[in-house]
Length: 60
Image (cartoon, rainbow, N blue to C red; front, side, top):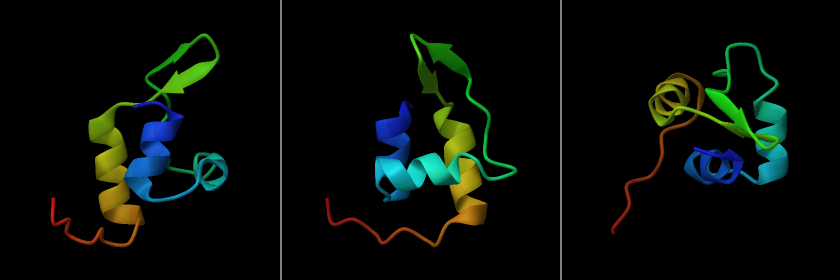
């Protein structure tokens, strides 16, 4: 997941994501490609499960 996908998954703006990523315990990037950090989806989902409010169920 790139920054836009992580922000979307967490339901926050990209600016808010930049604040969250600095928190202790936030998953480290898996890789950095041309200046863009890439995160493992499983690590982001696991972190969110313990650190973010529950996401509302989608009707999709």
